[in-house]
Amino acid sequence: MGDEAGTEPPREAQPIPFRRAADLAVLRAAVAAKAIAIGLDQAKTAALLVAITELASNTLQHTSQGTGSFRIWTVPGRLICQVDDHGSISLPPGGWQMPSTPGTRGYGIPLIAALTDHFECVPHAGGTTWRLHMILSDTRERRIEVVN
Amino acid sequence: MTHIAAGDHVGTSFASADQFAVVTAAFARQGLALGARVMIFPGERTSEALARELEVDELLSSAIHEGRVLLGDVRTAQLAHGRFDRDYLHLLYAGATAQSVATGFTGLWVSVDMSWAPPWFVDADTLTAFEAGSHTLFASRRLTAICHYDEAIFPRDQVWAACAAHPAGLHGVAVRRRNDGALIRLSGVADLSNAIAFRALSTGFRRGGTVDLSEMSFIDISALTALARAGTTADVSYVATPHQHEMLKLIGVADDRFRAVVD
Image (cartoon, rainbow over all chains, first blue to last red; front, top):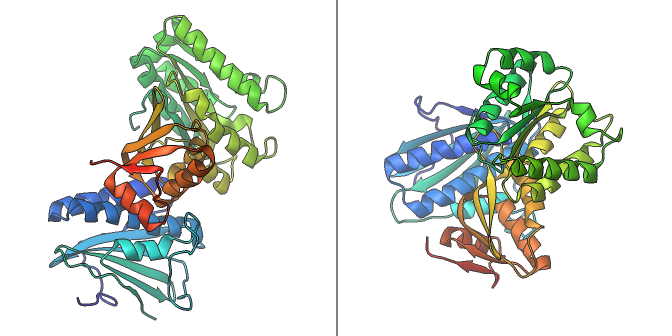
């Protein structure tokens, strides 16, 4: 699977700004509409809805400005969602791991990685760009990637 | 405005008095259409705009004349004892709802400008806890309420928390509870926008009861975690969809209390 980090979203992937919790429903509606349009299966769609909600909720709650923008587009065989925010993130030593105690906080990023086929986190001077990929075939590759 | 269902407890904020008036008028029309009595409590900053809105609305004007829409003074009603009194307010709303039903209405719809409880008068956390803990008032789905927070009075963080303390918002997100004998059925959406309300709701389930989540169209990880935590102390079991069960497994709480059903 090729990496998308560093490539720009296509022009038609217009940013959808989000600044409050009520906007999460708007993002989910955009994901659901695109998923239906391209025939992403139900289980992957449900997983992506949880993942994008988790990611955008993190932006709203844990970044300095508490706002972000969302884009969604397709490339052959793949659906890509991108969130840009003003947060800064650094890779924990040993990578992101699920918390050792069930039912506690800290699931966000490891969970997003587990729910998607490919997950990118690109910190930069203005904040962080996150990309979630869902592959339209049955091939499922789960990995976390940080590009500095 | 999004459709509000009877029994919803809606939290929203407004930047202008006109915004309050327009949303309140739409809310009142929905309540009247369902055969409910409507009570409106504007604040100092919103009363004039509301009066203008009601004056040009024939339906609402005649409903006021007929006593189906009542206008009240927000401070007199909410602060009858000159202070914030959670128990009094619960009795007030429960009584007003029962009286509306006893006089032939299907229920009571209330629109309140929350400026009666500014942060310098009512502690923000206390008010948020009051909102979240009010779910028992709405369990019969006879009471429907919309609480408007003035962005000129309440700081952004408090507005955020206040909205999250309501199960429903104006943008279509709502978690709804229906009692079906010993079974509690939840439907709708649980996410960050109603997270505080959902946590409060999930701690109020009856010991030994069953909660059916399978009609929920979306539930986020925090809400599932809240259920798992609440169930630990209250001995509650859950009916979940395979997708919900998969999420519970991922966060390590898919134990015997959660039973998956085929969706």
